[in-house]
Length: 306
Image (cartoon, rainbow, N blue to C red):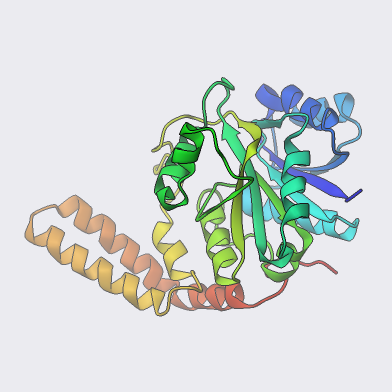
């Protein structure tokens, strides 16, 4: 039986804690769980310790964000012999057979080294609809004909997709050893996009498994990110994408062109926003270049697995 470690980053998770951790106990595949708490103030830590003592809980002294905290959990799981790393959001839970069906796809896949990420179908908190973001990802990957297969009830065991968010990711050990962990540049939002860019660069695949499902009780709005609270780092993900040659110069050129356009059309507020972004990335050129070079390397990038 493979060693499957579930890694969950918590921050004020009481709303979901009972369903989340109970679902791990009920999994048909035995699971070990590592939680990295990012400084909850709602009693999450005590609740886990008292009601789910089997969970390995680490309390971070500071809020590390999603990526860095997951990296801590990945490092710990690796040292304890993990064969698979299941990254799951705190606002999520499994069904009894969720992991079994993912592992069935892995075990029956001919060239296992091609697999970077395996994901179940994400359903929303009502458990009656797909998560709205999964609807989007499937639609963007229309060439797979998954929508057609769903309609005619003739789904295949898995479909290769370009992206799926990190609410439910199963990572084989070789993914960790060849792609690494999350880029520490990102605090919250953008880190999964940057990671999937590296999955593609290292010639691995992201597989979606229709027969497996799991719940992600996230906000069902496509534009849910509060840009007043979290920075928009889409440009930075492009710059650090090792699959894009000259990403930094291309993004700077595009920003300058957009600035001129907005200045001519009198959109001064947008011009100023673009100007701030250009100044920011110009000031971070060396840092962004170094991180991109790191991301291009094969190995346990951004992780300490010793």
